[in-house]
Picture (tube, rainbow, N blue to C red):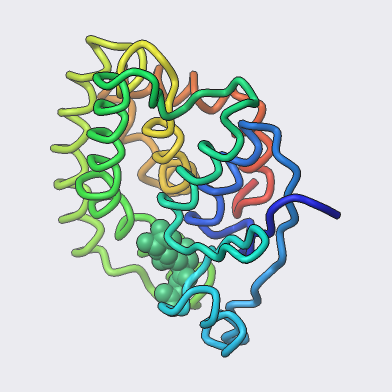
Length: 217
Ligand code: GSH
């Protein structure tokens, strides 16, 4: 099998981000599973790929990359001839807006949503523990403030960076996909433009395919 190699797990949010990019551009790739429950992500062969001992990592010949958002940009640049342009690098203003909303995803959206998903999904289903409701409640308050900003933005443009689908939208998928299988999915009901945006992006074939490999499908 040819193409790039992704080391990760289809249920991991950061792996899903990279797989979505590969699916969007129609690239040939191989997903090599890393067995996290037995600690394979901390083993010397994987530490050689990702020195932080995390997934995903991507290998393309001699080039080895980690950090899912950086890998995503590499994939989209490598396969730009596919005709799927999710970075808009030919337009200074559009590409800057893609970067703005990618940063918003990693610096604002992700820190607010990830503790909700971790406590309400990962802790009970994968760690056999009891969710910490205080963490969920305070994160929900933070997340609602972030969603207010998103609601205002998405009432002015169809997608986050403008009236075009981009990596900025795609990057929000993995954690939001997991929030939707928690008891807190209903938080989106108060934000109609965010809800419509979510329904739009999840109708894409790449999203359906990657989603099918995630938990709670
Ligand atoms: N910023 C990194 C990225 O975007 O790739 C985060 C990677 C990350 O947190 N990966 C998780 C992981 O490997 C799985 S989704 N966790 C195990 C650990 O941190 O030991």
